[in-house]
Image (spheres, rainbow, N blue to C red):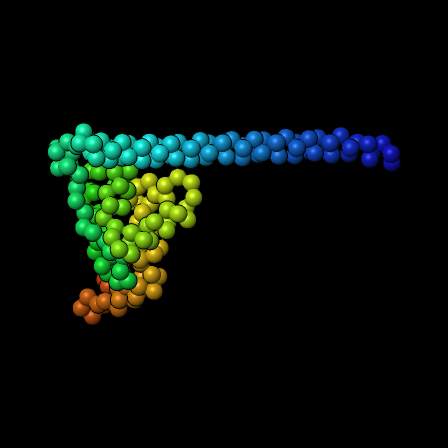
Length: 194
């Protein structure tokens, strides 16, 4: 019997060694991912600091009368409507759609989108944005318009309003059938045409 238990010991040792190697590999992969995440975060912070420093230098240059302002740049920057941050979700959705349209038409890059949108915040929206920035910690809380929309929808587009809109959509009728039934029929007919 002693020989059979000794025969299982190398198998157990091999299994334990494989498990230890797998754990070590998993640990190395986790550390590598953390290192990459930290590098990306550090890079975003550095880019944000550089943008802030450039803005500060431009502000100082304008104050001294040595502005690097170029009138052609003014024309390239699209104007967006101001957002005051009221409690009406419809106003927010209309504003959001207008900003989407402006950015799509003007092909504005991600960070420029953030800068332009933030400049359009007034009153409560401005207060809310400063609180978001303060609570975020390191780096900018948003690096694109999509990031800002996500943050804004969480604040200015309550889930109850979304549910209300879904209920309205479900209650719509096209003739004697509901919109969802009409849509299903439309999809079926289109699939048959292919």
